[in-house]
Amino acid sequence: MNTVFSKADTESIRQAAAFLQQGEIVALPTETVYGIAADARNGAAVSKIFAAKGRPQDNPLIVHIADMAMLDGLVSEVPERAQLLAAAFWPGPLTIIMPRGSEVADACCAGLDTVGIRMPSHPVIRAVIKESGCALAAPSANLSGSPSPTTAQDVFADMDGRLPMIVDGGNCQVGVESTVITIVGEHPVLLRPGHITLEQLEAALGEEVLISGAILEKLKEGEVARSPGMKYKHYAPKADITILKGSFEQYKAYVEAHRAENPACLCFTGEDAKLDFPCICYGKEGDGNDQAFHLFRCLRALDEQGDGVVYARCPGQDGASMAVYNRLIRAAAFRVITL
Ligand code: TXA
Ligand code: MG
Image 1 (tube, rainbow, N blue to C red):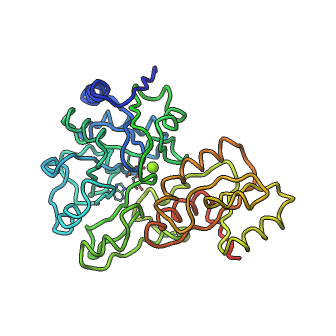
Image 2 (cartoon, rainbow, N blue to C red):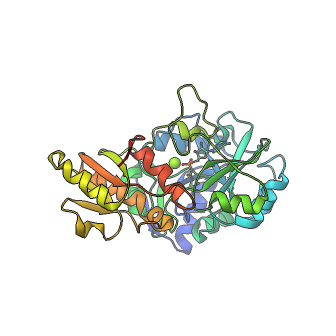
């Protein structure tokens, strides 16, 4: 298949909308990461997403809308908690798991009686939703198992020949996928951390939000993932990444003691000048948003360098850093050494 690569403009938005109406799939920018979109009511179109990504069928998709009226038919009700969250964070990088409506294609929900809904803020995907009139099922636009793409070039590297069109909207400003929260149970539960933090969710809801077990550590043997995406090995680069938890001085001493392994460093901005090893800087120390913005591009840059041993500086675990830690421990296959 020939893949058209177009800068986002009125004409490419119109063409993307036409593809979607015809049951095709298209890669589009959002404020978090690039997505591969299909009409969420068209099961045949949605199944093309799974084929293009090599995604397991039991991992459900997020459905994207442009306004609250589009919820009609996608969800069976809009619970009060969803209304509070939507008022506080939509449009924006938050996905809310709600009771499923009758019109969503089965393939979006992977057999669950719930559906994840998000109203993105990025002007390009919003324009395509409005132009096509379709709610769009859209997972991240990477091959299953590689880091989510934050530039159109990264989408092209994974998806050339696998879909008819990529719309280039520049760098994604958030850099990690949306926060996912479920509100269908007795207590709201954070399923995936993102730019919208636990503290912000609790403030908007006025109640405690529980943290799903798989977020900050490996799922225990036999434990069931509340969010199917959590159980897969994600973001696995070619390199063997180990996270070193401690001060910069402890980090530097550890890496120097392991010089024989020819290690590379995944460090914070500015630390490369103080390290006598190949370095990739993934953002400012203590600034989770800056780290999130850079992280996936850096993991792809590591892959482009090939395999080998990599020691990573440890991000924080709370606030905006929780999302970074959650992605990085998966890239590191949960290897964290406390110095
Ligand atoms: O920022 C984002 O959310 C991006 C952009 C493209 O919008 N999309 C994205 O989709 O990250 P994806 O498919 O890569 O991640 C969806 C996550 C998965 O972990 C999936 O298991 C979870 O959301 N999910 C979707 N529907 C669910 C449901 N009904 N119940 C529980 N988890 C669900
Ligand atoms: Mg993904």
